[in-house]
Image 1: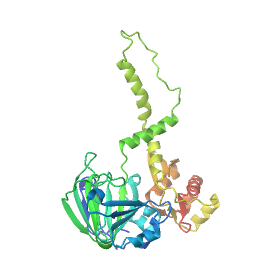
Image 2: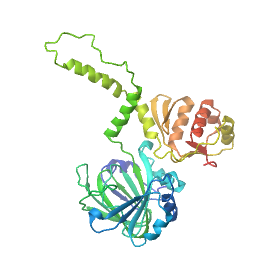
Image 3: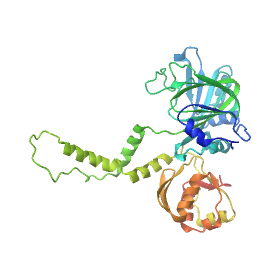
Image 4: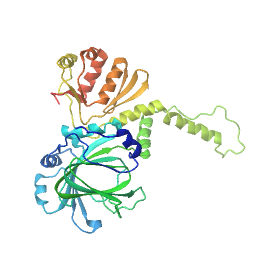
Length: 387
């Protein structure tokens, strides 16, 4: 999938994390990449995160019923007269044509991209007015949907009591649009929004972006630090002097204690290494491309000589951190790899495209082949015909 034209720099300058933007069908040739029956089939499978949301009452506090998948196939037969929405997460991990929707948005760094959630709704169906803590592009796949946007929200915004949904207690729209197939609505974090299906067979593709909170980062990084701290790294004060009052905790002691923490927590190289591994850990690791037997170097060389394309596992995450001239730290599915020289160039290629073909010159490098073998064995890469 490709855009005819889209001003990326203008979008990032004027809209990204600032205000909503309606983009009328920018695609070269839009076609809905998924059949509703296929989506329903995914919702019935084990290991796939799915929710069925019914609006059952006119009273907001009791209006929304949520069922979590896997759903029995017969469940959909009893829904014809209800206003309902089916939501399925990470559909891009299972359907290549849905994964292709992410390509035009790759101007956002890999580590920020989460997944593609797909919703299907009958007339009047929706999930209610809410806000998200992350950016989202809402692509209308089929049918029509009314989208309304409202004010900026935060942790103090009043919500309705509900165990599964974060619904706004009060919502007043400031703008609204009807989206047709191929149209896109960008909604920044915190902006209240509400989508309602107009007519049946309404499908929307939501490309969401990760925005880790400070509490999340601190909690997980502290766990990493604690796992690696040595017990003999302790407070010391060889320049201790007699105090006027032995009950005082002096400013010098506080400064020394704080420095003990800062020395570990503010280590930039250690943080980059941890964050690369943390941010590339698969959200849904059940999509397993691991071969039954370890891959042989000769098999890789044969596939490359035959010009077979290689494709990344759609559930895998690839990123890199530049350490210096000609050296990068590659992160794939929670693992890190030190790369230099031709391997560094190959690592950058891996992170820049979902599918590629290697030239024989690159494949002549033994270190590149060793990295390839590791990525094939852990199920992060495969030849296209095997995928």
